[in-house]
Each structure stands twice: as C-alpha cells, then as structure tokens.
Image (cartoon, rainbow, N blue to C red; front, side):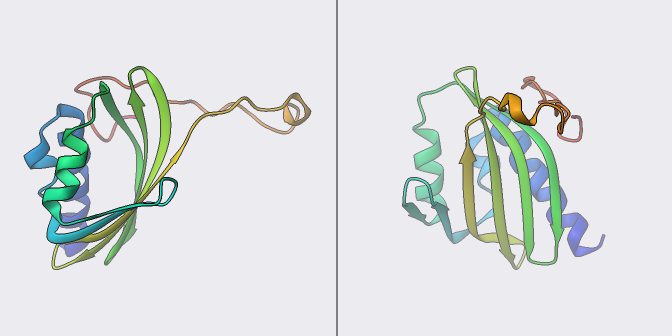
Length: 140
C-alpha cells in the first residue's frame, strides 16, 4: 500500500469514528503531541488527550457527513458537514502529517447562509448531503 492510501484510510476512519461517537478511534489519527487550532474562536489544543477531551465534552448531538478528502504526502484537507443538534455547519479540516499521524490540524467552520436573489441567474444549487448515521464515508 502506498503511503497516501494509508493516510487516506486513516482520515476516513477518523470521520467514521467521529460519526459513531468512538472517541478512542476518532483520535487514533493524532500524534501524542498534536496541535489543533480553531481560528474562529482563537483556541489551540495541545496533545491528543486535550483534543479528545474537548470533543468528548461536547453536549450537542453531532453527525458527520464527509463530502471529500483531497491531499497527498503530508498535507490533507477534508470537507464535511457537521450537524450539531440538527443544525448543519460546513467544516474544512487541514491536517498535516508526520510519521503517519496528524501533528497539526486547523479546522474552519462556516454556517450556511441564504444566497442573494441577485446571483440566482448565475448559480445553480449545490446539493447538501443530509447527515445519515452510519452512512458510508465515500457516499455523498
């Protein structure tokens, strides 16, 4: 197996485990000393234990729908819809790898917004996947 397919498989398992609520499997992709940044809130979490603890303490019902994974080598990007208590948020996760584990992740969150009428003639509607528990990662 080439290194890229192994990393892709690890990222896919990370998102499947996130959907299952399996904190141990979800965080197995991170190096022990990984760093996670949330630029919108200005928070930085150092270490796999801190990253897992902050996600494990989330009170909302969460679902994860992976839209795509792109990358190669040590840099990978995942785009997914994270639904918190039924409200979708688009997320982009930028993961930097070393020795097969995430050493730095930056995660961006964007709430949906209504498109202005002035652009209606220029755009087509994008399909937004609905979060389905247990849905295969590759399905859109």
